[in-house]
Length: 259
Image 1: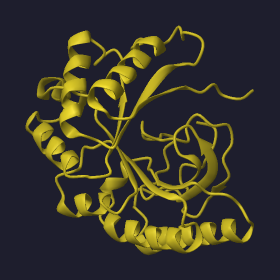
Image 2: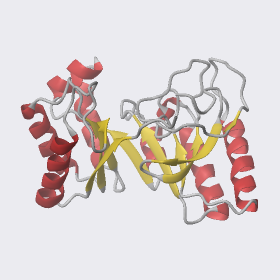
Image 3: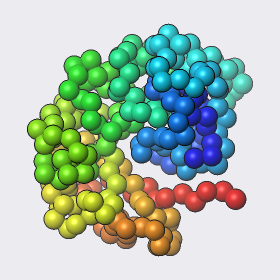
Image 4: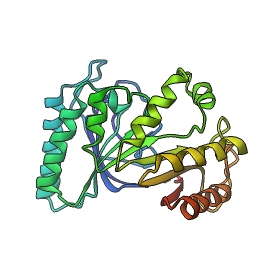
C-alpha cells in the first residue's frame, strides 16, 4: 500500500470502490506497514494523510481521535470539498479500541454538523462482537460493513483459527443489526461449491441490508494470481442472491494500481 501513512489517525479523503469520496479514521494505527483486509483505501495510488500520531503500539485516546477527525472534517467543509463517507477502518480491527462507542457517537455528531449527507461507515473483521459495547457502537453507524464469508462453524474455525463456538455468537450479533452490510471474499479457502452454497443460505438467514462481494481479479480480465471464484462466477452468485433472497448484492472488482 503506497498511500496513507500507517501511523496516521486520519487519512484521505480518497474515492473508494464502495463508499465514494471517503475520509478514513483509523482508531488502531500501528507502526507496521500492514493494513486490515477490509481497508477500502488499499487499492488507491496516493491519499493525503495527516500524520498526527508517531509510531507506537499504544492506541490513541478517543479524545485524540475525535479531535484529529474534527480538524480534518472542518477543514474539508470550509474548503468546499465533497465527502460521501466518514469511514472508521484500522490497521488492526477498529472494534479493538476500548472506546469505540464514544468515538462513533462523536463522529456521528461531527458528520451531522458538517457533512449531513455523508454516511458514517465502519469496516470490521467481525471477530470481536462478543462485547456489548462493541455491539452498541455498531448501531451508531449508517453502514456497519462486517466480514462474513463462512457458511458453517467448521469452515469458520478452519479459516480463522478461532473457536467454532464463536460462529454462533457472530451470527447472533449480525442478525441484531438492522443496517448490516456484509462483506465477503471467496479465495482458495472458501470457494468450494458446497461452501459457497452454505454461505448463501446463511446470509439469507442473517438478512443484511446489503451484500458486497469483493473480487480477486480486475474487471474485464482474469488475473493469473486469482485462486478464488472468477468475476463471472461472482456475478452469477450476486444475481442469484439478489433475485432469490431479495438482498441487494454487488460485486466489486479489483482495481488496478495507477502507473
